[in-house]
Image (cartoon, rainbow, N blue to C red):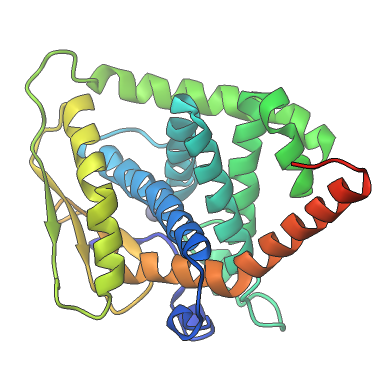
Length: 285
Ligand SMILES: [Zn+2]
């Protein structure tokens, strides 16, 4: 098998409400775009994690899918801007809400024997690394998504172990003055089914930014490629044979629609409640 799947979300695609059917304000549309791009950014780093494991022949102790999730999260925590923190929170929400699409009868066995942890576990693992990296900064958020304080406190050790492991395996491959690695970008199926998703990726230069980051930071033994294409499913892959990270346009589209159909109503409700509470207290923002 050349391809590794990040998640089997195909079944949920049909459930999402088509965003096109709804009239969004500019603010709502911008928020949906940011949400989709934030989830895509973490996914890109996850797939680049698979690429680095393969190309740099890195040892992986434990499940690779969990390990590259950790790498993606650690990298975003490492830069640690407000945009990175919001990006991580959006990714956590993405996993939490995709979990809610599961059929009411519960999990099927494939959820347990699959290569990935359950979506809800992936979301808590990310939150644990966040609060483990900086308790003061992230405890309020971790509490809001019901990560108990006892667990939050033990997450410092999860973070320390993960950070130490990834630094040890990646540091020997840092570029340090060597010529930049050969990382190309390609958009396939440019007249495909998802022109909006493609336009979002191109405008935000998501593929280009990560290609540049890999090229400038690591010495790779072979040329590699970062590709966006129509896949016929909601997914993202690293292809071992072609040495290619493949992001499906469907992935971007899925998270845009997930935001509009499920997350936006909840966030807008909480924002309204927050404002009402402030008004009651006689405060004006
Ligand atoms: Zn993966």
